[in-house]
Length: 341
Ligand code: PHE
Image (tube, rainbow, N blue to C red; front, side, top):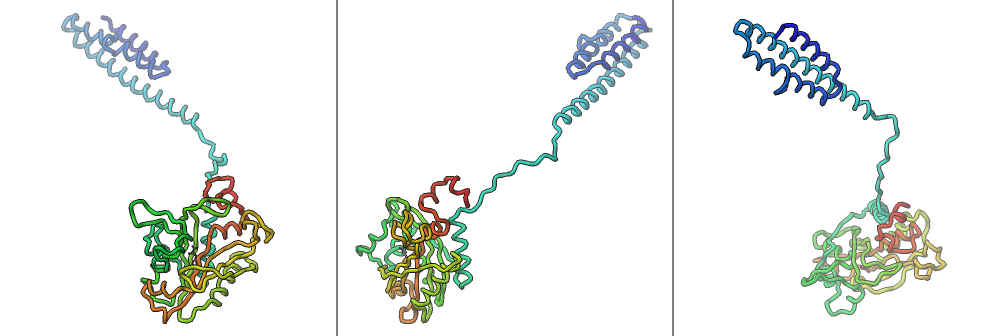
């Protein structure tokens, strides 16, 4: 084995390493020289055949060559990796000056918008917002409100009862009157917004579930005149104009006397349309002076206290405000409808 061979081998290997363009190619070159059957590995094996004096010297030289090439390989690997990185970075370059994609923002449901507006108006008038459970007992939904079990008045509320239990889905927000007065002494002013349920056939103005807003004001001398003043003021602030109101005598077991409050239909200006069942008037709320039995059932003495209560249909109010002719649109989830708000 001649010295010249090693020098030639070195230049040849160096050149090949230098020229290689990919890690795969480089790996091939590595195997060719330093792999199991590589040229340099073979050299090491052939050392054995050399005479003693030459073996040590040439052995050292081959070893140096091996180490040298290893370093060159490592350097080249780094170089290629660096190049790949640069190229992908160039490919993945992002133009941050381009306008972004706008995220689709949701918004409040018209029922929620109106609920908040009503709450605001009543809060300004000194009413407190209270809530109650949607699943009720017969006691709070009926008995405590002066509607005993076999009384025909129960038929006013087509009720959804829960299977195998005495519980039901509340048919109105009135149970919260009792719940609140049990725990709070008058004078008091509350409103109770909430979801209620009826076992009813649906049409343009009826749904199986809808929203009500209960009102209750109790004191030493709260009268029906106070009711009328407050409710007129409410409608005025809500619609931001004077609204025609009509009070009709009515019947509710938990108020005495009772009345129905209508406003002239704002969808058709009183001419008659599906939203007002072609009558020109829309029933907005039931109301009346709190029945003595309701006070008794809440633990209050009807000799000391009197007041009014009302139950407002939230859906109907929203329909009037935005001139919507079908209540079912609120619960349809139809974005063509909802996106208009
Ligand atoms: N709770 C009655 C209903 O749902 C409405 C009402 C409330 C009437 C308060 C009078 C007083 O029909």
